[in-house]
Image 1 (cartoon, helix red, strand yellow):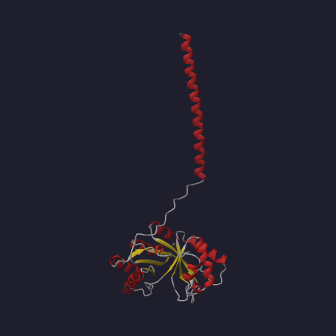
Image 2 (cartoon, rainbow, N blue to C red):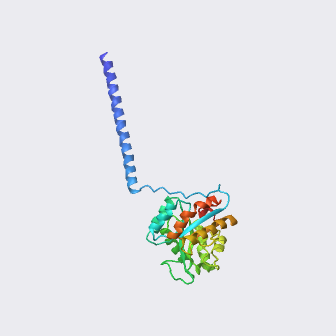
Image 3 (cartoon, rainbow, N blue to C red):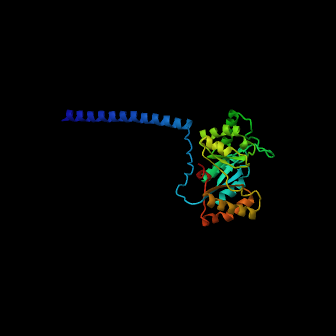
Amino acid sequence: MAPRNFRTIHKFLFFVLVCAAGAGVWMAGCDKIASKFRSRTKTQPAKPARVARRAPTTAVSGPRLAIILDDLGNDRQAADAVFALDYPLTISVLPYHAHSTEIAEEAQRRGLGVMLHLPMRAVANERPEAHQLEAGMSGEEVARALGGMLLSVPTASGVNNHEGSLATSDAKLMRELMPLLKQRDLFFVDSRTTAATVAFEEAERAGVRSGFRNVPFLDDVEDVGAIRKQLELAFRGAKEKGAAIAIGHPHAETLRALKEELARAEEEGVHLVFVSELVK
């Protein structure tokens, strides 16, 4: 019996050694894989999650009103006051200002609509931006200018013109701009700072989703009472046209009037929406 027991023990020890050796190889392999993974994650950090833009509202029926607030970018407190309104507003941010990027990114995080407020040459050109579209620019110059501005306002899903009474009436310049917006899947809203504008027509011709301001500016007169009256005109315009695009600015008087009056929109049967929901 002793030899048989010896052989049994010998087989058992051999089995244990084989298992141990296999486990060692397996652990070494796992450690090698883990080491590669750790090295990869150090050299290739994970990309930040993209924030989805709000989908268009298809269930809303009845009159719709989109309000764009222009000229954001320089005053962070004004932006915070807009955020505090807690309505579906669209902000349009000037590029290359002190807080342009952070305001645009914060607005997207909060679920607001974000646009690039694209500076363009005005007839008088009294307050030109450092970078703006000018008549006579080549296609390459327009592309370079637009690309830089969008880097400054990275979350923009659309564009509207800042000033631009001269530029938007220049068909050649608008023909250079609109295909670039089409390539980037950006919509365009004509602020209509001049009756001579051809911007909306050129956007349509290029197949860009587009719209235009079709009610009076809200705050040409910076007075709360006057702005209330303009908001009433905007509500009425939405009812008459079915949809309206209004434009204002983050003046203290405008923000006060919006805070006091926007709750009345739903009472009057007017639905507040983002401008991205009205462009076609």
